[in-house]
Image (tube, rainbow, N blue to C red; front, side, top):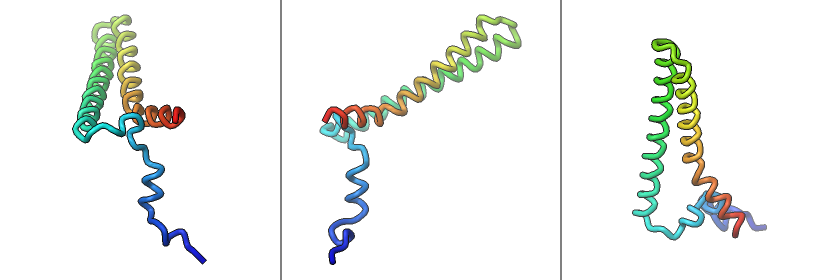
Length: 102
């Protein structure tokens, strides 16, 4: 009687499931770090846009009673949070698309 645990460990299973950078798997560590830094900066910029939109909406709605500024603020909030979501899920999207192509 053979047991499955005799041939490998949990790292074998997890290593087969975990994403491996898909089409960017052949990049060096420096390139991967640069991509991660660029993505982190882009997420911070998108969060900054969302905060700017919230401030613009609040100031436009109460202090200035400017409905156009308030609507612009709503648009900036939506754009900023959408950007954060898209950038945050790029790694998963690349892995899925690459896996479907292979």
